[in-house]
View 1 (cartoon, one colour):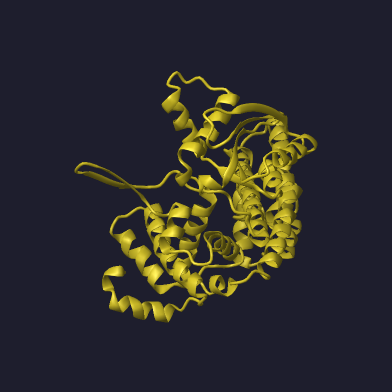
View 2 (view 1 turned 120 degrees about the vertical axis):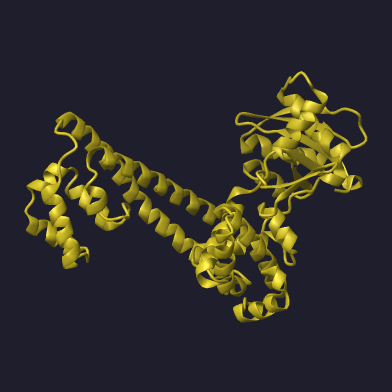
Length: 410
């Protein structure tokens, strides 16, 4: 940032009940500590009064979070810029000047202001996000969170069924969130109720769910006939049944929510510019394409390959000291963005000849699965960056012809 454009620096240590701010002019040696309520009725008018008192130059607000209500209220006002500082940066800055480890809110607010005064060339202010980018980014984040919740519920349900009704893991199908499994567990919550039912009723149930192959039905009939309960303790079975019904109810409630998010994501993604580039990528289906589009849109109109790799954390970290040099996995990274590129690399294996060859050749060489996917994602960032800059669709034939001129790149 250009410190000459700033008229006032506000180091803001945010909290739920009260914000602690350090007001400091760039040329001043110290600042003034002010405490402001977090309610919009208190914080908003205080920002307006601050603008009236300091009407020359920008007001730079330095804080630790890059989003939330505080950032929204600041960015909505003209003359303000937001500078987000990584919490690890503030922590190490505090350790450098406070070796004792003492910490308080006014001290953190003063250190935030000090960071911008001493190192303005290292700081960048947050740019207001494009509404479509922010909407699609938030929708994909929240959908992924719901999917992870469903995965955890399925894992809990699987573990529970192993404890009291292991036969259901085969009788209800491999997907415990599917309608077949849900209806099966609701109708027959334990082995005893299943064995008391007539086979004609069970067979009719399977046929209603389009699972009526004679071989499969025969195997399931034999399994039910030979099944032995884990326990005959009624109290134990009652407790397990209650837990199972609770987990199934949560699974049932999540399914329409995920479908609603899918509809919102599809409707928003259909209106974004440049989606033809992303849709042309192998493996970029309805779930992955919006996430990749957000990754490219957040990097700007003309990102370099290294921009995409570094922003996502796909690029490794090099540590060098003297003759020692080590290249290692980047642990400090935006996890969802990193996950998006890695999952796209996995999906591309089925639709891209060179990606399939790249993965299996390295697997035969003994490399680990995660390392291979990160390396494959790194190659994809180079390809996608060029396509995004030129707004050209991906052409597998053209890329394979290009690889023949550079055999070392494969």
